[in-house]
Image 1: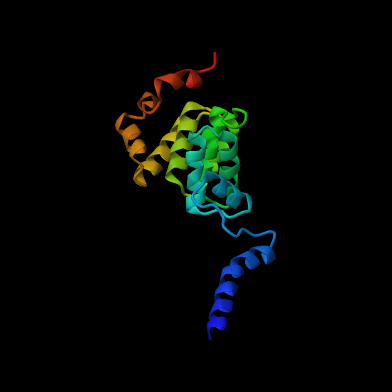
Image 2: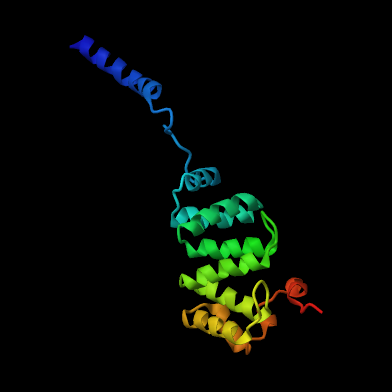
Length: 181
């Protein structure tokens, strides 16, 4: 019986080494978890989820805008509206790509059409300013109202300020919204 116990112990010790040698070369035996690299790899494989898509916020805040843009674009393709609003932010500010107000307004439109209150609010601002889209203050206010009805605090704040865009525009951005003349 003693030899059997020794043989069993040797087999159990050797099993992990054997498993590593015969593992699928395309798989991960011990994948990293909870890292930006893992999220980027998973999204690159088409594995979008609320947590993977939300990680794009941390990626862009760390200054890795091009990678955040890739993540958000994939997530937006899969219907994650928060990723659409982040694509607008990145595109409007030229982070990780060219500044393109028209494309940014289109991302806001897509999010708004999908029912996202932030997308509706942002598209409302785009319309009220005429940034990236033809100016239409009435349509813009209607979208801000829709976002406020959905409970978005910043939209309610803008309503309370009688739609004065200075209420939601940082001083540093004022030059971007000045009328062209």
